[in-house]
Amino acid sequence: MTSITTSDQQLRLHDAEAAQPSPLPVLRGVGLRKRYRSGSSTLEVLRGVDMELAAGEFVAVVGQSGSGKTTLLHLLGLLDAPDGGEVYLGDTRIDTLSASRQDLVRNTQIGMVFQSYHLLPELDAVENVLAPLYVRYGVFEWLRRRSEARQEAVALLERFGLGHRLGHRPRQLSGGEMQRVAIARALIARPQLLLADEPTGNLDAASGAGILETLTELNQSDGLSIVMVTHDTAIAARAERVIKLADGCVEESPATSGRSAHASSDFHERPACAGG
Ligand SMILES: Nc1ncnc2c1ncn2[C@@H]1O[C@H](COP(=O)(O)OP(=O)(O)OP(=O)(O)O)[C@@H](O)[C@H]1O
Ligand SMILES: [Mg+2]
Image 1 (cartoon, rainbow, N blue to C red):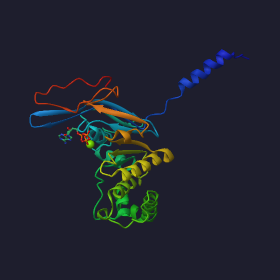
Image 2: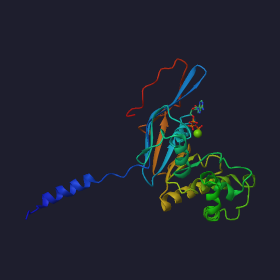
Image 3: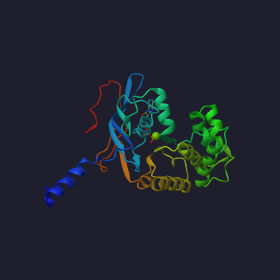
Image 4: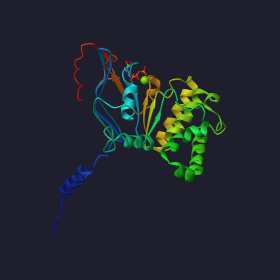
């Protein structure tokens, strides 16, 4: 019989620990580049941005106006294609999927919240929340599931304090109420990831604080992974981690002052971000 010494055991324990794979980030952007051309000038908005989001993490993205926050969120949420780099959801590269597979990922795995809500004016609050499911299910599937789906939509709206506004259309709702309907819509498909673009940007301080409470609770009690763009440093401070964009890159040190995207009419690609 082989005897195992304490140091052997420790070694084996270390080996076992080393063999444990670290959990995959939910979302990863690798070397993301985006440039816009207008006339003879080219604007390099992102020059090789790396970012990742762990499961259950709440990350804020900050940076000056024009620094590329919305652009980055659109690349991560497959609303726009990068000029370089890769986007992964778990271990799946998603930016190169076919358009129909990207639609499916957007519709089932990623919830998006926009600064200007993007609610459909002719639908009431419950119908707006259900809109992604109309798109996802065919007619027969929808008829089979609609009563259960409606109950879920109502439950989400009630959770966000809108039980008394179920039949209201967007024009009959306040900004904070519209944003809560938009958050409920982003969650109806039970995504693992929420991408929110300045969800408090158009709101007064009290409504903004309410939205932030909602997002914090979703993160803490439901384990929802969240990327939230904001230019409000006080709001960013509520996130677990802050990613600052400056000059087309993730700023290494929060103390370094940022510049916004750089336009050039005589276009030469600028160096990639350090480490990107
Ligand atoms: N479709 C487009 N065509 C040309 N330029 C664009 C386009 N979209 C964005 N830009 C430019 O890219 C830069 C980054 O825009 P983006 O919307 O990502 O900035 P942002 O950090 O979200 O700013 P804000 O805080 O004002 O929302 C801006 O200078 C903007 O003018
Ligand atoms: Mg923006």
